Image 1: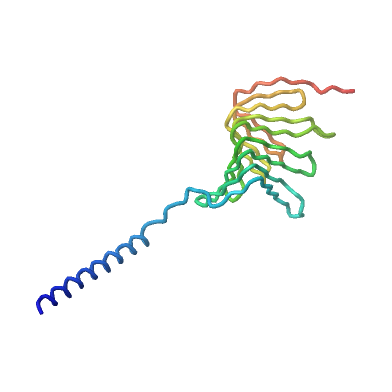
Image 2: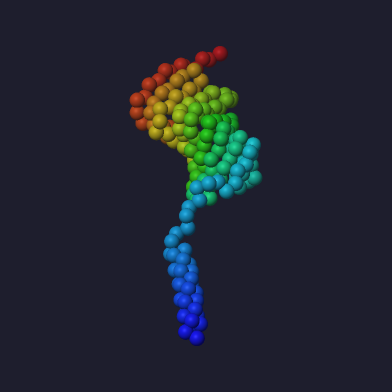
Length: 189
């Protein structure tokens, strides 16, 4: 009889210990924050994303070879991005780089490595080209920014500087420092 009581008591202690460990584990999971995901949850190859305006016309589109979505900060990593910006009163502008990230609810496009922007000549404007190593595009605001060195070409004129802010909506343009340029007057026929 003593042996049976000892076995029942030992089994009760073992089950009680297992129950206590499980309760503590659950409380720890509730208290501890969930580990942030760092791996992408989906990817797309050879994509074309188009943002429309209120009237249904294309404002800009983004294409690339691959796009990975990161749920931790809801950002996108794009390889070989090409951004076409459209405007009613100007020719389309094409921005290219080797990689880009899209952040803040798709309002910021950070372009990295060998950034090139081209706008062809039109009846109202000369050809425009921009090269830099990094560029922040704010497509909804029609703004471009960079703290890096930049080279701009407008027609035959060239402008170099460090740090740029260009607001296409208002027509404002600013270079922060180390500005050098070569002005080529427009020829009249």
